[in-house]
Amino acid sequence: MKKIIAYLDENGERWMLLALYGYIVTVVFVEVIRRFVLQYSSYWGEETARYAFIYLVWIGAAAAVKDRAHLRIDIIFTILPDRWTVYVYLIGDILTVVFACFALYWSLGNLGVTIKFDALTHGLRINQAWFIFAVPFGFSLILIRLIQSIREDIANIIAGREMRPGRKLFE
Figure 1 (spheres, rainbow, N blue to C red):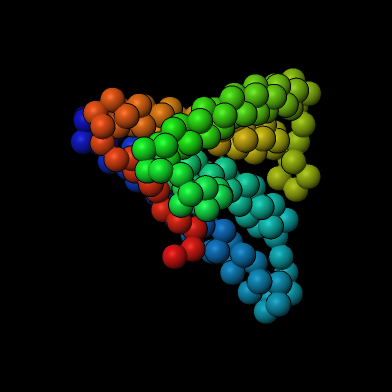
Figure 2 (figure 1 turned 90 degrees about the horizontal axis):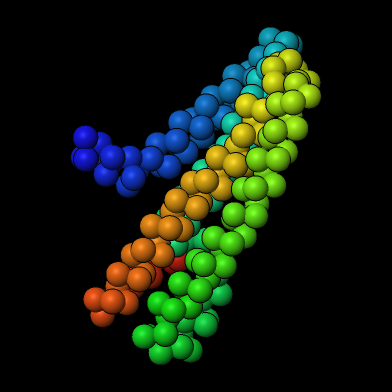
């Protein structure tokens, strides 16, 4: 069981991103063929691809936080001494936790309103809550990854190890 959890911890976002991206590409491809070859398009194709893209973005944000590949100003790290770099990452992660907690709170409120009033999507006529849920889901994943990063940074500070720098956006 621990191997499964470790595997999901390492690759969970990647598999979700792959599945969503594959779905989006497939649906858009099929819809283009249907529209221009068969002169017919479905009402659900564009809508489900759009909502899948919303999930893709939020899960991708969590994956970027996990890999430390999110946007940052790297010039600061070249100016600072190496021992201070971990503290800058730690402060940035803590500030991001505060922001994510506020955003999670407000997104859950929006989700509650959507559920309460039974708002329906335009084409599919199903509850929008299924798709509004992408925001609190994404922020929950981001919070989990931030807590893991903070724990790792604190352990590295205590042990005197170098920190994990993360990946750069363009190399």
